[in-house]
Image (tube, rainbow, N blue to C red):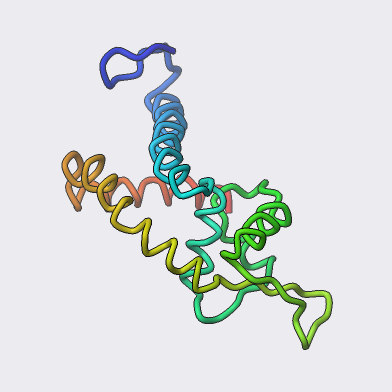
Length: 154
């Protein structure tokens, strides 16, 4: 597959096949853009995704299983990512008092501050790469189509 301008050029079996390749290609491209911003703050895309999940549940903690079920990359080594976030003092981890087999995690105030620092940087990416190119209506339609594709498996 080669790229001419912004368009992928390859032979496809169908428009659905072209869509799948285009979604995968675009996901990697977007991941690269996000990675550059996050590297400047010393975290990876997977760590950011975990912090975003925990920030959304704050001030409540989540079990490791709940966090894992919400991650974008399902095959993530959650324990290792958590170890790194704990060492950076961005999250806390403790054994649940009611169920000693369950480990709960929560974002720290330092983690919340990092997410707040990232917010304006990410808004610039969203504006430059999305709002100037895709209308809200197009974004809603595309999100709906992507939801349809994922829900086929469930």
